[in-house]
Amino acid sequence: MAVVLLALTLTACQENKAPTSLITGGGNVRVLSIRFVTTAEAATGMSSGTITYAVTRLELTNDNNQALFPSMGRFYLLDNQARHIAGIDSGSSVFIGISNDLTALKPGEKREFTVGFRADPSANGTVLYDYT
Image (cartoon, rainbow, N blue to C red; front, top):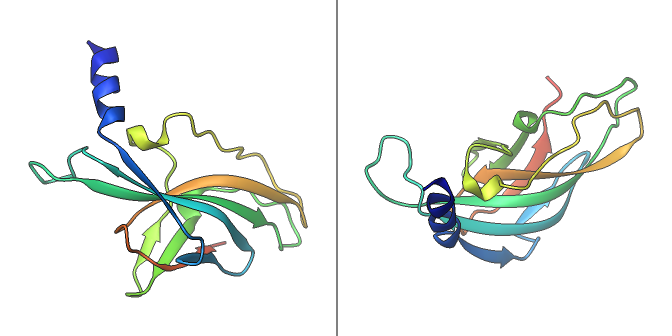
């Protein structure tokens, strides 16, 4: 039964590649690729509907003078309406197979991450990393 449910969930997802010019990186974050994935998973508090994620492959550079322990929730998309949309990498079938390395980044070291932002398919803005 679980296998059938997973298969139905995965087939309900629609994926669109987006030009990286819609969402750019800022500061120590560089956007490598973006794809918008719409899923039929119900939104919290809604009986039906769809949710769209901007699944973004990023490169983060530790421009601090001490080790950085990355956290997906510290990535955020500052969209064109000045909303801060927190990054995630779990909690939806969209993120099946995504596994980010959360070990410490030494000063000057770079690493790639895959982070999702719950956003409209036409979203644009800047991805940043919040050190605080």
